[in-house]
Image (tube, rainbow, N blue to C red; front, top):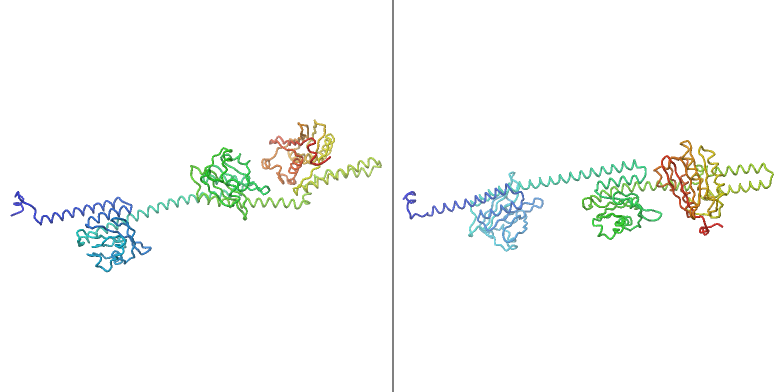
Length: 609
């Protein structure tokens, strides 16, 4: 009967040949479906783990295996390790090349198909012992790339129905291994490209950061060369550092060698100006801790840090979130610290910020130390060679020496005993003034104090002032005016107060002479229980360069012959009298010094009769 006749028969049914063909078609359809899923995975999946999971699942189904395993080669250790192991659990299995059936395939590069693994001496039973799994039939194929380099081994275990893997299975798994190799290489290339891209971005960011750091260091070096004062340098460095690191505020704190306290010399942002008035003890606050310990501090949760001075921050009206503080260390000594506050955008200070600050702190500390040593050397040299300073202080001695010479000449030409006695007393008085001036200078240089308070009649004091200043102004183009409203008495060291007026007047003459002279006015009056002395000039005013340190030792500006001690001695004398000195100055309009000292008996305990 022909096929056509059978098809027309109502009782026709497929025979064994047809059934076999149907089974083959079904099998091929299943395999093609699995191959299609593998191909799709290769095209759309760039995650190696995900790719291999899809591939191994389909390998198991295509070969009708119980499970399948993929080993990848680790060329650094000459090992291969299991990336995917399907079954009850995932294990990390490592084998040496040549170890076990898969190891043999990796070593030889040949396909292996065994009916029962336990009958093969190359089989390693340890893995079954670890997993409790019984390996029977095994089909293992090497995975090689287009260059013939071994990437791994794929194996299928235990063909369903206790069957063995067929030659068709070998061809199929070999084809799949080629696809697996393509997938592994694509993912590896993508991963390396992604990593290289990320590395490139990181390198770009690091390069940009390094360029910013170099720019900052250049700015520091430029600031060092251009800064007129240490305060200018610290302000420039602090501003650049805040910008680079991204901080809202910052400050430089220095150690006062005399008091062992810490003071804020430079402060930017936040409550900077108010912070300059604050003094700390070493160990107090984060900055104090950094100076005391000589170690940096990174505090990204300031309110929770016991070192943070919460009350101080509150009083200044500044909310501190984070702090980065590094010590200024030079020659093993901690000179102070640089402190940054509140990383912008709520970020935290990190290691890079700390590195930048540490480098800058080292540079600043060296410059700061050099400046301090230079200043100390200058002071020590001047104080140690005080005799050499007399040449620059000739005016301090000129007036009394001239008076002595004049009185001695008068004594030589008069025969009147009373006049000679009067002239002799005048000579002794001028000599005492010279001795007092010398003693005062030496005591000031040594940091000692000595004041002899006694009752002074102010009308006679005015005569002494007029006599003293007439000689000073006689050699200048400036004019002297004296106006005194109070004619009573005061307790003071007369010689020292004369020195105060003389020093201020001499400074005024030196300031007014370059502009063709001016007027110096000396006056005093009683204000409450105080004697108020005023010294006013019509000069150009005090330079901004020294206005904040006018009373410091050796503070001079534009005077090549000045000792720099004049106003420092003035301040010291006023302090010894328990008084106060202030000044007002305006560019082009002049300067007025106001001195207030107590008038009455409360000062008797300080000395004098």
